Every structure is written in structure tokens, then in C-alpha cells.
Image (tube, rainbow, N blue to C red):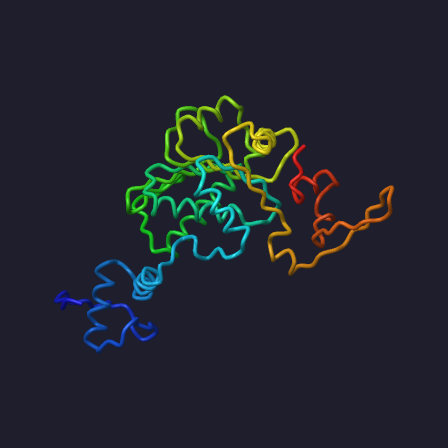
Length: 277
């Protein structure tokens, strides 16, 4: 480090910080001054350096195969649709993909659309936390979005009208959003990449798009994130449910407690088994 002649009376505490190198007392003081001038904590600066040195990205925490498969599908296709079970933490993963795209792909205008205002606020909070964890600065912030320190603007909405033009649009829980096909077509035309994710809901536009994707009738690459792919469900416990048929009794495996939490069999089949009616 270059010697810093700027005197600091409120230098950050150095005692509880493990520095990346064996530094002298003077070098530690210079490092503390540097961090203060950059408006960073010492631990935050070290974390930033370590992440850079280890080649870590916003997608590094996702280790399960179904998560890696979602990442591959979204990054490898300009139109992707994810049919998922409940509690697969896909929304959090999609926020990380947005951050990854904003940083590595230099997306300039990104839109994340939630199914309601409460979800929008939660997603904004989660994204802000991910920015902090990845040492990404936020230049400006409003109730509906933020501008990152590299100039990328990320908007958060709970609905969309016509006229949007951007690099990336993500629809979270799309089956529960009110949108007609004409609006969806206008988004597809004006946007480079479109990601649609949801648990199924009978009669929704999401179900229609997913069924068309299964049959090769639209541009979307379909991927299924079924509950059985998530190790957390296996840790919570599974139950074998007997099913009588004309040729005898078979068994279907279900996660413990989920059937009791859902109101009927159709809801279970949609929200857990990814059934598209």
C-alpha cells in the first residue's frame, strides 16, 4: 500500500480482523486508512479481495444439482420457463442470476416482476442483501429499483405494461400475475432475455405457455424443478402413500406434512407435483 498521509481519528478497529497477509503495524494502519477513505469496513474489503482471488461469483453458493440446472437453462437460453414445486427457493436463485447477469453480462436495464407488492418489497430487500454480500455498490435506490455502481438499473415491479424495453425480464410466480398474451408478446419482442418461473395454477397463462413449451409450440426452453430434487425435503422426511389400482397396490412418495398444509388433492398435484392442468 502507498503511504497515506491523511490522518484519521476514527480508524476502523483492527483487532478482530484477520488480514490476508502478514502485515506490519504500519501496514495495518495504512490498510485501515485505505478502507476508511473508500468508505468500507476492513472486513468488507478483505471479503471483497478474497472473493476476487477465489474466483467466486453471485452464483457460487448454489451447489445442488437442480439449482445448477436452472442456472444452465437460464444462462443458456434467451427464453426459459421454470415449472417448480413450492419452497424450492427459486426466487432467491433468480435474484442471484439477475445480479450475475448485471455484473458479468453488463446488462443495463433489468426488470424483476413479482406477483404482488409484498413480494416485490421482499425481493428488493433480498437483492440489496445479495449486493452487499458480493461487495456490489448501490449508487441510487428508490421504492421500485436501484442503480448499481456499474450503471446497471434493476427495477422491481408487481405488474408490467406495454412499452418496456430491456436486456432481461424475470417473472416470478407468473401463474399468479394478471397478464394477457398480447402484453406478454410485447415483452418478448422488446426484451433480449425472458425468464418465467412459477408453481402451476389451473387455467393460467403460465400453464398455457408451459404446455406449449412441452409440445415445442413456442420459443421457451422448459425446465422442471420438482420437490424431490431438493435435499431439504428429504431431510424433513418422506412418506409412502398407498395407491390402489386394478393390478394391485403401488406407492407414491410424498414430503411429510405438505398434503395437510394444502387444501385438496388438485392443489397438491399442482403446487408439489408440477401438474399442468
